[in-house]
Length: 286
Image 1 (spheres, rainbow, N blue to C red):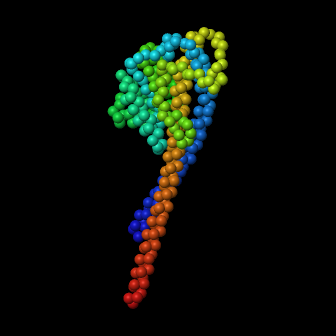
Image 2: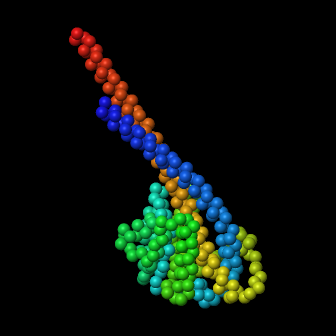
Image 3: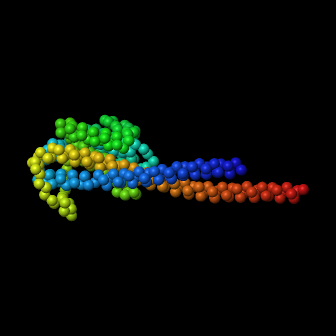
């Protein structure tokens, strides 16, 4: 009977866990929908800005603006966007491992790592990597504000020649089941290529001021837009991965409960059979 009690206790524990994972799945699904809406709202601005930068940069030399100027070697700054919370599968681990491999492949002379999100910070701290600055345990709007402020600071530093390259590392949202790692050079700005199938890219804008004057204000906005879009993407990836993980955990809990219920029924049947045999044996002995 003690065995039956142990099985029943374990079933109660698993059932409670299943309720938690099911609730977390629903919360993650709601947050993912909200994050997707933010991406959709930000997309028109990002695409229009990209179109303007594409048009402005056609025929320009890299020396036309400091943010376009390429420099060899020197210090590289990596801005890593991860999540603060776990329970989202291998999302953060895959991103950090991909960044680690990328650093080894590129063999940069000197790297300065800046992390947004606790998981990225914890991973690289455990690897013994020195982290220049870390932003963590912030609300979504606070994180966005911190990112924008840091990117503006980095733009100023790049213009002053304090480092030679800025790499942005994050996850990008494809769909609920697919999130991909992105390692993208943000500075110096690589002018977007004109896509032939997109007629909007072929439109020739008429600028009231000269291209050189407009570049000074539009290029920093373009860099900020890329960073902000990356943050929105990563948020959507986090909630999608957590929803998938919690769904899988809920299903696994259901399978465990079914197996334990079968074990419990067999053990109970065996216990009842044993009791009946003992009763019959006792009756026959009278």
